Length: 304
Image 1 (cartoon, rainbow, N blue to C red):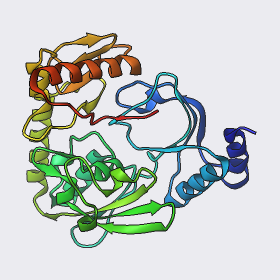
Image 2 (image 1 turned 180 degrees about the horizontal axis):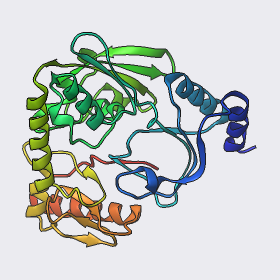
Image 3 (image 1 turned 90 degrees about the vertical axis):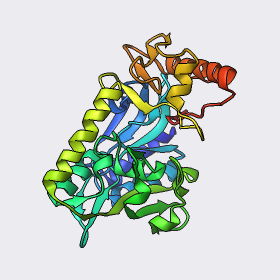
């Protein structure tokens, strides 16, 4: 019996009302608009359902992958013979004590920042325009305009396969540039995050968020599908500047292009495939290495 046949049986027995899609195009769930079908895609609504899904996956021999907003990921054109667990419905946001906000892993950063603004809580203005989920953001220490998750996080509830659910404090997250303890533990799953903010005026907070969003629109190719910054910032350099200096701005392979607006972005200008993006990334890495001696490291997560 194939893993997904056994998985379907377990779902019917224990989670008959759970939304599960078969051969669902991953392009419909990623900001790159790229990716073939997922064998199964499940949408848990709470931590208990997510834990059950992971247990089923282990028992069935499936290879689960946790997908948030799909904003920093590239899936293969042929799809994946895997269970994709989409956390979009685990998006609850609530106050959690004085100046604290608790957000489910699937809550978008924009919604969390807007919630904080309505409560008169400052500190998340930088995150308003980051197109990701709370779970993904804390895993990679997402940041922009001088702010990052490490500055506003109290802690994270994480499911570890060997020990169960633990609350990891910010101090123990081992944050670095676009990394954390959890980037080294792909088997660990973020359930929720708690942010500690400070008092502010909602109008001033809103004005700051709108200013940063205007700067983002002016400098980034938000009108095209992409996965955000394609490469990590090398120490002592800016990836976009190195790419531009290597003559890669506007470089195109198939439907993938190095943005004319910001060379740090590979964009989908129409019908781009995963193969197009990977070929373009490899060419950019080659040209930058030849010119500057710097090897660019992908920031986008490439799933196989």
